Image: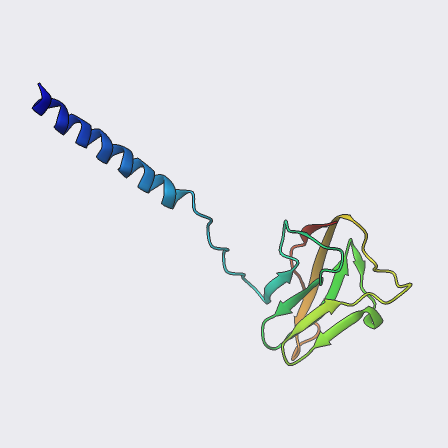
Length: 132
């Protein structure tokens, strides 16, 4: 009797180990999908919960520039920080400025265009994040 239970126990243990192995790899976080178009990255990332001091901005593909919008309002040039060499546009709120973001949900978007053809403007889909 003892010899017939042993193979059954081994089979059950192997089955449990196999299920655990499959579950461990199927529940791992998925890598983010690569961006399409000229927007390479957004900050804060979509769906993020961040501090109010977080940088809001985008990194565009080489050869592009654009305008940043936060909560549907275009950010004025005097509250933007542009790094042309890195194709980055970020919000830098000034004291008493329009964009001192409070806690809660905010959405940002960018209208971008190639430096060579400024008339070819495109709107990237907005991304939303929460600040606390």
